[in-house]
Image 1 (spheres, one colour):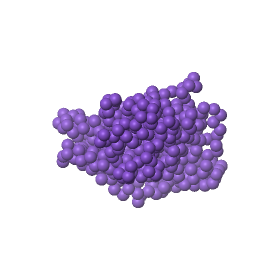
Image 2 (cartoon, rainbow, N blue to C red):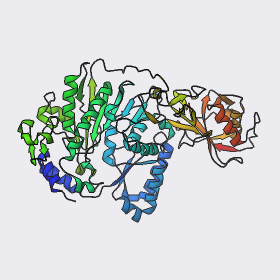
Image 3 (cartoon, rainbow, N blue to C red):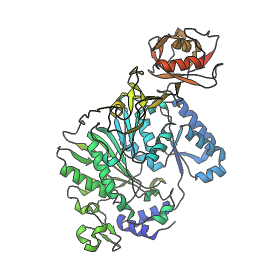
Image 4 (cartoon, rainbow, N blue to C red):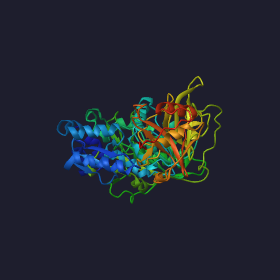
Length: 552
């Protein structure tokens, strides 16, 4: 695992032989296997998963310490599969059911500095394959005031991400809208965002530990290939950011051409050409997440030309024949609007510091007037292909429920629920939404989500109560709760699951709501009819309790 050009390049750029030697040494070692327990909102399940991990992992399992519920094992997947088979199989199983998210440790850092809260409207500009997206969703925690728009240009990668996100608890899935756009051309007429993650496409030379092929493929010019795209994405992100909001720019590259050079140029352009009086700046987050070891951003660097095979400090130094191989935007001394000291607020994460891959993170904000709200754009039609159900808002308390509309205008059999802030995207033809929220039903049968819409602890409920709900003539189906069920959680939305009755061999979920001393089923008539048939309720007939209980 050697590349002479890589060593020469970073020796010139970093001007610190010790740091470069540390990078080379650590990059040549196997990357630890890292993952997060992703069951936020369900402490009992989280404790069970962690307990099982510790039981099977033994002394090999370590906590990351700086990332909540993050763990690592100092062995590769191949070694685990061979030497710790039971532990490895549990990791695979827990990942498949959404309890774990396999994610490189250093990749967990950008969402941590984004610091999304339960009141934020968040844009993940380049979201696929979705590991950082899951972190943001966990931070939003199913709040009905929060929204995450996960965007990516690559439709195939989006499909992989949607599959991955479908494993997460439905309680946080309600915050999600997935869009398919070129991040640099994301529509500006829908809304401004309070938090934005721009984890942009890059050369990826920080990933050599998990992608050994990079040792052979790496060359100094790789960074130039993505430089212009990175600038376009960051400028669009700053445009979409509301005043006082937070944008995190990140790459899995150590190259200043993709990092400090992009930040410098975007600050110069945005602050110099913006006519709305808005100014972008780098934030000092040195006192945030102090357990994470970081290095300051570079204040000077050089640009390499493959034509002459030389480094240049300024554009004026570049001979005419080599000018087509470089760009003015790459040079630190060509950005008059940037104070070099500000760049030290950027953060570099070197592999040797925490036994990770390499990464770069910059935290930015925008201040000024005139940019706090987006101008509204009339939808002028069906928007992105969704329409509210005939019963309009079937699920109250901040959730909306809608059918997907097929291209020919008809309704499909899929019904989804999401937080109300998602409506601005569902109703807008610019949004290009490809997935959203949590699927409630499909083909007239309730859809089996991995968890209730709001993660509530399991309880028992008399079957009579549930069947009484379905005996009502029309929505909302209501039944009175007896005094002995006063222990129901004060959670506005939860689900009842009937398991293995005589008339059905599969579990059934019904979205319900507690109102005072009653419980309401919030589906529409078609869903209720399917449930009636499945549990054997005929019209107003009510089954005897006969001591039977079912899990809720």
